[in-house]
Image (cartoon, rainbow, N blue to C red; front, side, top):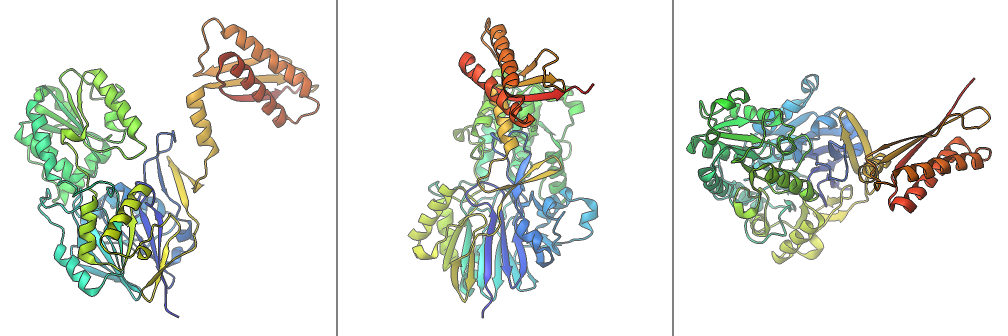
Length: 556
């Protein structure tokens, strides 16, 4: 019986971020990418979310390698968490990608893994897999598409890409290598789909420089820009435009400073001598001589731009004449928090550039014509759209159909539900254990698909409704020995009604305790008190808070 090549996405399907795909052949396992995603605004307190790697961890002895297509966090951000529990023999990627990865991996872990740097056109064999790395154009240098050659055919992962005819670093996508790959035969193409609902070709990254220059030329004071810390091409253009405009550049935030340091050391970022200024010396320059580059395009709570908008940044306060640029599109789900940040910045006196027509951002991802061109180059038998919301996958599927791929040969997958290839034929596989793992500080909390964590629900309710805590003290006979104590946080009552509602609430608590103390357990009694408190507030204030009841017993 022939071996079956299994291709199973662990993340990145039906969502933006958390990209990671498992390949398994004769019990040998490889991961293509290992990323995280930012939490939506309705998950307060969550730092970020990574894939559930349970399937890999249970088979960790079989994990041969993690292949990284490029250095963005939605493709590398979960690696440090994976290798705490399952160490691959190799982590493979470009020098820039590995530079970012090593910066986030604990020192004692680095010595147990071989980090293998690869260049365009190089191949690397691991067990039953051979990987060929082909340069693609994206918003970060060192981006690869990966051809995976096996006994069951060749599968090509595009990684994130677009056909950029004028890339910032001058390094074009290697179309010649893609054409050679087509001549050898491509069984399946797994294509980036993030912009598949956009017609035409995605614009060149170089166009951003033109839009930036127009703004810099007319900016009356400081220019403050937020971008992703690993968007190296964008950072380079900000440096270039600042140099032409006679401005000093200040880098703000640990992640951005580290990215600039690594990219500069490896020769991917050119920072002219004398152009960088520190926060300590910022006041010695005229306002028109300063460009501040920080993070916060997605409204992340602790990012530089959000702290500036909230007046909580230690070094920067918005003043009249500041021009603020949000150089990035909101990830779906983040639109509201980004809009809130923009409004706050306007209110503080800045003029904010954030719209598409401002010309300060283009996507790094493929639109419909990019996908069409990739399909025409490779002529795959099977097509699988990845890296996108469900709508993007559907639009990508439509493009593939228009390019002549049979509908039966196009597979829209789900996280945990992949496909198998045997003798050139593809079939859907049963679902493996999948889901998400929430990261809060150094705590990891597994969450199955479509499952809501109770504590997240409670946080959301407290944020929207306010909190009331009721404390009741009983003696051994079940009698209330002290006045009922109520404590509220974030709770608003109509002026003049507070005293009456609080009195009704305390009376209802006493009534409930006396009625149920002999027939209910403490847990049942606390629940009954909480429900009655909610009813009082619903009747009198038209809104009930989140209620916590503590029944304490005196021991004498």
